[in-house]
Length: 328
Image (cartoon, rainbow, N blue to C red):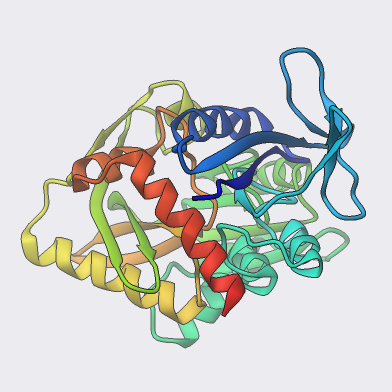
């Protein structure tokens, strides 16, 4: 069997680069080397290059190739490990679509839609999915603090509309803090989403649907030691992640079924993670992660392990699914 050549693409143009590098390290280590030749490719504002211990080699952006010992190396597929722009918002997906290189995520449209929190919420709300009320403010807009509060109440969460890992997120309890929180979020993005506060337990569910199998992963409850699931809670050990979640079987099935419906409505591909809040026995959609973290501390690897699937085999299925989709 001829080995496929895979690029594990990491880095990015946002503060999530650090997390992306950790995901890529884990992915590159675990991918089955008997089936795949693996290169880690760094894409950031400064360089596009293949990482080697002896020094990085530049990527030719014309066809996403590189030269190694006078040989031209091309890739059979891309394992996307960039969280945030340009790997989760559709920009790189568009580039790889033009080059006809398979990617382990959904296409450029799906990626752009799901990365925009407000657009995804609106799209799913129209499809009947329960979600928190929200308002959107763009840079340069005239907005009324009082109108936002009248619509959403207090507390509210203020977030960059296009971003992740809780950078620039504030929980606002008093009206006089709202403008400061919006200004903080504007430092991360040109759009800011303000969401009503839903007091409830936080859950997340992973899912991967291939051409011949559904991986409906266990539900995880996130119990943050901070006031909400912020960067410190996510990446500095200030949270407990309980997998499988200690909820009833009926609630588990309902959460997994909702995740499946969202996956199909949005036409997601590859593995995704959907976040929820549970209040009065109702699951409220919060956001969908189309390039979820894959570091040792990340939730999806925990869910795969609890599911009983070998992580290396799971990655093989992700890669092969991307290649199969491209050839149809």
